[in-house]
Length: 89
Image (cartoon, rainbow, N blue to C red; front, top):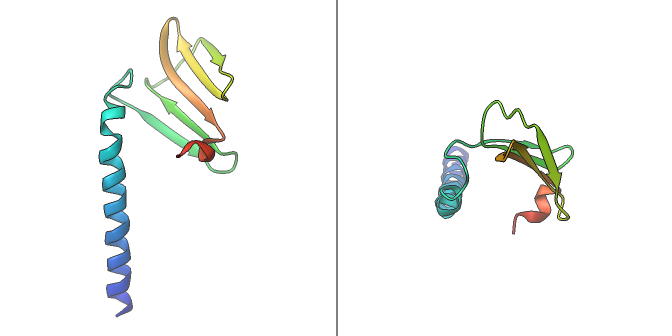
């Protein structure tokens, strides 16, 4: 009984993940790179997104909304998103 409940909960979580990923596909395909590397630091609520690995940014620009844009020359190579949890809606 408990095993079946765990299996059901796991399946429901998987379905939620799949649905959310499918919703993101059109947005992902519009990004500057088809390869995306992400890392979320829960302790400080910061999401790191890199469009190239290694990122090797040579310049950065902090936007008013707390998003740091990272560039190598004129090419956007990454973003650092502060307070990521408040942006999820």
